[in-house]
Every structure is written in C-alpha cells, then in structure tokens.
Image (cartoon, rainbow, N blue to C red):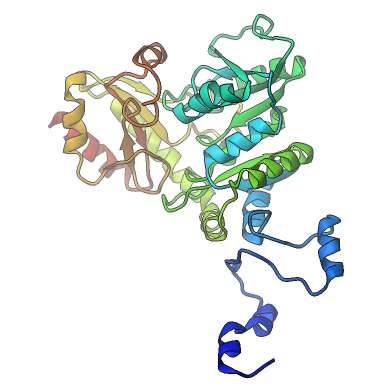
Length: 382
C-alpha cells in the first residue's frame, strides 16, 4: 500500500474489516462492490453469487427479503423502496399492455390509484369486484384477464373475506394471485399456503414496526420474483442498505409486537363497541378469521363517530395518541382515511365504499390497553 497521506485517507480498514464477524448483521452502506479479478466479474454475471451494485442487489436487501419469504413460506423474495414499489413490481412481473386485472373493491387508496390510473397509462385495465359475497368469477373473466389482487385485511374497513375461497376461484381460471398481507402479517396468516403466487407487504408497517423506515417486500415463486427483481432494478425502486437493515432489525420482534398489539386491539374494539359516542366499530371477528394460523384478529380497529360534526374536535382532543397518515408502529396512532389514505378517491367512490367523514382508523400499539381506552374515551367525550 502506498504511504502518501492522500492515499492513506482513502484506503482505510478494508482488509481487517473483512475478517471481523459481528453478532449483528453489518450495514453494507456501499453503492458498489469490489472484485478481485475479471474472472469474479464473469462469475457474477453467470449467476454464481456475489454483488455488483446496490441498485442490483445488496446483502441487507437480501437478508430482509429472504427472511420475509421464509416467514411467508414462499420460495423467494425481493425488497423495494416502499410498499407501493413492491406492489408495482409484483403487478408488472405479470402484466403487460392489453392485460386485465381483477381486484377487490376494498383496497388501499394508493393501490387503487396505481391499478386504475397509472396502469391504465400502460394499457392495462382493472375491475373492482365485491368479495363479500361468495360468487363465481365467471362473469368478470375476460380473455385477457391475467391477475387477481386482494388484501387479507382490507384498508381501512378491516374486512376479512374468505381468502381461501377466492384464491381457489382465481386459480381455477388460471389467474396469478397476488395478496397484500400487510395488515395481517405472516404471524397471522401465510397466503401462499392457500395458493397465492405473490404476497406483498408495506414493510413500513408491521414488518419494520417502529415508524422509522419506508420499505416494501414482495415474496412468491422464484420465477415471478426474478422478474419482479428486474422491474425494481430497472425502475430504480431498490431499497437502501440502511433502510433494509433497520427493517430487518425491526422484524426480529414482529411476533412479540403482534401478540401484544392484537390483544390490545381486541380489548379496545370491545370498548368502542359499547361507547355511546361511537356509531359503529369495525374489527374482524373470529368466524371470518378462522383460516388464520393464530386466533387473533389483527391490531387495527376502525370506527365511525355517532356525530360526524365532531370529527375535527375528536382529533384535536387527543393528547398522546398521534394523528399520522400511516400505521403499525409500537405507538398507538389514528388516521383519517377521507383526508389521507383515500383522498384520491372521489366522494362518490368513498361513499359507496363506506369511507365516510366520521370514519377513524386506529392503529393499536403496545401501550397498556387501559391507557389507550382512557385516552380515546376522553377525546370522544370532550
């Protein structure tokens, strides 16, 4: 190694650091990776492992995606810069110009916009269907229908439809099935076990769990994930190493967090059902979640105020429960779907879906359940 000052400052610590084996995964905060020889470069392009450029792949990205794939009982996984990035990659791994998508009419507003507006610009059409009634897909199937999309627990109405039935229906017509499992997480259910081809998560939510990352993960068959990986790389939607590392760190406590948050949510939902200032409480019941692997109904609760004119006062009256346009952190938070997640929908579309001005979406945290209920009660009665 040359010993001039300028050279020494650039080439610091590489060889010793390669010999260190820490208990925790290090952050590979590098945009590119070095090769020992041209032969190593050729081996990389021959698919024999290694890394080239972080947009194409990074150890932290792979650790996160591979872990979620194992939890979801899927063959492979890929991470993305956001949940929407992962959804986009999943859709474009299957769809092209002229194709048609069937989707539940109850989906996250951002997904709705992607399906019905952005994909339309690519010549891909979509149709929303009501999955609350067990029916045949026959009247919705076209010759160009390629994919079926649904959410395990819908956002924000928290509907749980018969996922095994609808996956079987879609597969009987040869459709690729994609399920957004963000609200349930693999702790409660693994859609791949019922035949889903792709499962997507906004890892910003329960996977990360601490409201300090923006990330997405898509898992499924090796063939579809490889195509999705190409979409993520080519569209520049790769997850940063630090975000991947933070998300993977949060994932380690997913089971503990979900257990506590689900138990809290069940108690809070019962409290809201009996509250005089609440018109309706939306929370999945045990009958609809019977196919879940654990007897839990999730950690989200939605409710509508008996007097919609008090909605602004309700949010103003909250002290430590934060108003935030996201969910699933360890702290309890609330959001207002009309003005945040489903703002892009027309008033008629929101009304038809039951997303009213008085609807509150509550993300239940890990605090003492009694404190959560006391805070909600004070705001509801103020």
